Length: 303
Image (cartoon, rainbow, N blue to C red; front, side):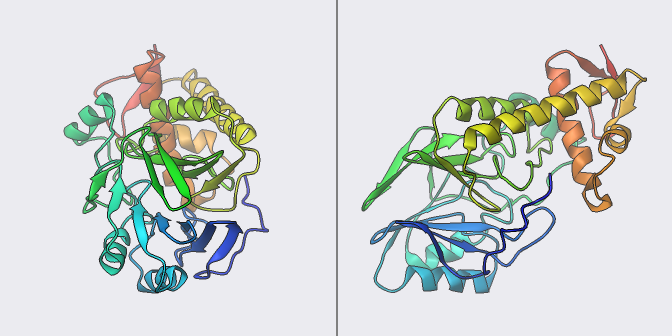
């Protein structure tokens, strides 16, 4: 799915999206971050900053300009511990005095199978993880935080990474990297977990949303349709992977080369990690199995 060409905001400038909500795009564009990380500023008099972004001095200064001298920041919320979302939280906390809230550190929220794979040390992964991150306070699933004129409900939505949070603001949702409009999320074991990703999609689909504000790209105006598409897309990938394995045992690398035929070479590595995530999920569900131990280059077969 190609990114929409009409999303090209001015980097570093606070743009009002609706009353009480502004967005600043960080200067970190890439094939994985699109135009850059979206930092959101919620509130009018007492503010909440969502996803301060990468460790970038210019972006910190842009956030501080948007905050201004007369509006206190009461909360800094980090949706997950990737290097394009969390590192600036600590410098922003030092500048504002606000506490940093998140689900936990880089390993929080991992499923049992992912903990086992991480301990074995043969699954790879670890792309872009902020290993130094520690929140001042843990924001638990369904916990509500509030300020002057706003409140947020935390939803634990693991999948892209185990500690991923989405944040409900009335019938709006800050969906971070779980649901984006311009691309699908990278799911790379052991940090990412496709079984959890699909469960998180089902959880979000069970509620009625007006709009999603993602971690990268523009707002999603039909969240239900986007969630349906994401689930259908993953199921389609799963079917292609199983079809590929009908030809004989194969690795994630070989399957990705067959299935992701239109993927640019620069993104084929990420595609391979997504295939591996599917293979782990299919193994957990009993549809495939590795011919030996489960590791990054394992060969899988249909059971």
